[in-house]
Length: 439
Ligand code: UGA
Image (cartoon, rainbow, N blue to C red):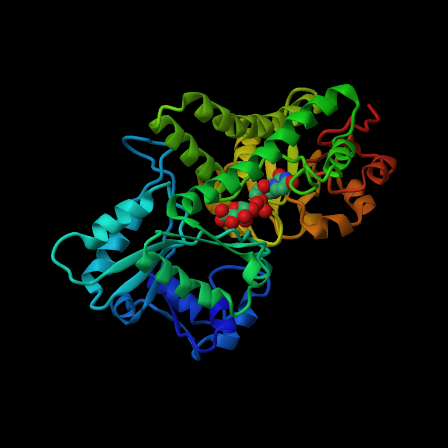
């Protein structure tokens, strides 16, 4: 919405939320999320054509276009538990829009939804006595955290799904007009509503599938002395395969991949496409396996016991340049290491507050330390889980000197210079490559 406000000075954008604290933060100097480039853009538009408010009913009534961006988490109860999308927030929002609309509106699905959600939305909006017309569009979001501004300002594509009726096409054109302020026409794709809804799930499923695919190959590399980085490079240069999203790691995290794949699995099961469901579910199973494998590699390298050993965790966020830890592999990995009775010192430049919340159940044996040098004091091993660039520039000789010997480093992202670490004296365990060990 900030980018829309920046690029379309002739539009008034009002962002509303039920949380007063969140809206207060958006109106303050300390925005509630960290995203490179966001703050300066908010400051340019805020109070001019970008407003943050909790007056939801009034904003609904004022608006011609409403972007519904409420969260759609995985349902944790009843039918579809653990897989289906919990649609309660979407439904509550639809009812609120219906109650407060006195003029026709275009309602845009921005949240990630199951296929055919627009149908349910339309039914709710048009139910009962109401002369107001609602046209529903699907306009899924493809931006990634950390690069959100760039993804929004120079998108690969903007996807808009609509009904193929005169009113559907007219609504679609209204949305197209907004994007044409900065997006080249050929990057705007239009489809029917269901293709658009499904494309969002499929885009995330394909991206996650690539990560699980390369992670399975990483496990094979570790036992055959092949090198997963070399394999990724060799296959990625085939233009049909492409080079992106082929970095092996401790498993994918983030608020979307697991949730969206499980949503896809649930849809397939609902339509009794059981083989299709099993295929996609395997992407998630392989991810779980990869996280567990990382823990086992640590355990095996450190003589099959972690009891009382001090491990320093480098990075807790699900990826660098964000403080977000939702579904971060670090959560699973740290809990497993604690189960093995290791003592953990966790360091991360932005995510320590979230890490504290994520591990509040298992606080015994965990310390959160901002300074990486302090965090490695007396450690037996380092587990690098998030590839923050600052970890590349640390003085590893100094770190080695502070650690217990033999000193281990488990580079879950192949982020560091392994040969240099080995020469300092570390026993180095990369992902998808043979270990460099002095033992
Ligand atoms: C993802 C998609 O990339 C966006 O296109 C989408 O809009 C977004 O979900 C969403 O649905 O909201 P995001 O979750 O921000 O974006 O992060 P990604 O950059 O996709 O990374 C996800 C996870 O995969 C991270 O844990 C990352 O470390 C991991 N990853 C990524 C790998 O392990 N290897 C890779 O090669 C790439």
